[in-house]
Each structure stands twice: as C-alpha cells, then as structure tokens.
Length: 125
Image (cartoon, rainbow, N blue to C red; front, side):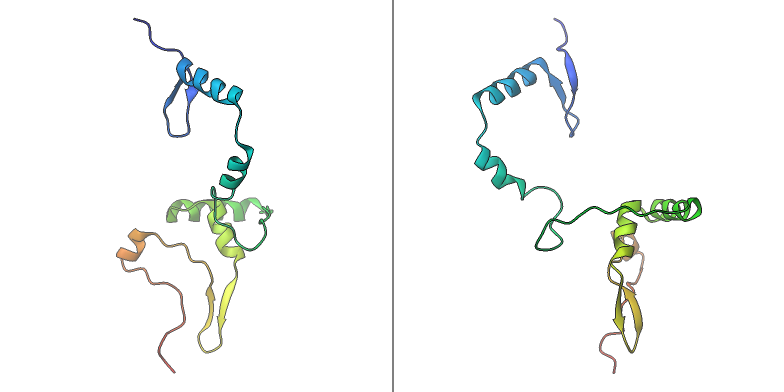
C-alpha cells in the first residue's frame, strides 16, 4: 500500500492529503455563503482596540536599540511587537505616586516568583 501524497500541512500541523484537496475543491465548487463568511470575519483574530479597525504602525529603531529590544523580549518571554505595543500605550499619571506603564507584560511565572506590578500605592492617603 502506498503512502498518501502530502501537499503540505495545516497551521495546526495536520498533513494535507489528496482527499483533503478534493474535499476543499468540492466545497469551493459548491459555493460559499458570503453572508456567513462576513458574519464570521469579525469574530476571528485580535480583539478590536476601539470602535474602528486599528492601523498597524511600524517604528524605526537604530541597531543598538533594536538589539536591546530583541534581548529584552527574549529574556522576558515576549516578542518585539508585544514590547513595542506596551511601550506605545504610554503611562498612567498618578500625581502622588508618579508615572506607571499602562500596559505591563508579566508572565504567570514572574507573578508566581513574586514580581510586582508597577502601580500606584492603593489605599494610602
């Protein structure tokens, strides 16, 4: 018995065989419900940041700063885009206690190890 021909893999790692290709082609030839596809569109991907679709912005970094960004992201188990987005959110200004990052990237492991969030001292006057 011969092995089925593999045309690639899905995002989850499953092999795409001749049978899968035939099923997808039959589905496409039968036609898609466009209204159902449009209704499903907004339920996938990242959640919206506001009332309208957000734009993707790039930043220019000199090689030294980019190296620092990559090193910090690697050390903290994050990605450069996550670090950039957190930095671009800015700071919460608390007059008695100073500025605190609005978005802080902290892993569960860091929290369990006792890492504290940078936030105003609550309950004090």
